[in-house]
Image (cartoon, rainbow, N blue to C red; front, side):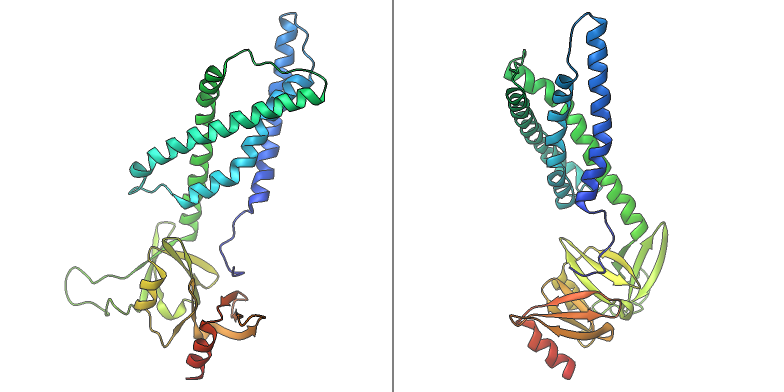
Length: 285
């Protein structure tokens, strides 16, 4: 990975933040359970509701990275949400089943270690239905927050598009070899010269264009983008990367025949063993 990738919270940091938030909620809920039991004249040890709450909390935290990965893998956009909504509903069922199974195992195991016996008054079907009604709301909340954060990040980061031929009159430039990209950021539009793109990295159905310390996602495949750019300027050191030779500073050979390309902004771009001789030939030419 290049050092110039767009800044994101690390998954571990995000999990720790959510762990702190949900732990406060779990402790509060446990204390409410104890106080409610006391009001009804029942004796309830504090450790029991704590076990209930944290046995439910732990599977949620453990599966959050998987949920975030799914949101990035199948993002919800204006043109995709209707098609992908059934997929998310199916995923919520699987997520709930995993949550309930792990929660019950944790409760039984913790009670056994503490010398007690956990008995669920509800049957499995009733428990699954009850928990799913809660889990689907939690699932929807995390999905909504993830997509909202992604949308806000894209608004701040901006998005790029290839300039198309104008509706009226001759094109300003050949569409096959664009001289500029149109960048949208925070409701404004900018023209970015193709020569200002330092490198590009494939990211699923997008390619991130690196320009003066910022990444602008362009909805295109790397193969199509390579065909549209000038091969005398942009080189393909790796199947997932294009680099502007004007921003390449040095080549660091690695064991096994690969190399790292040191770019002007300090990023390190991988170069495959197969592409390294071609890259050197192109630079020499």
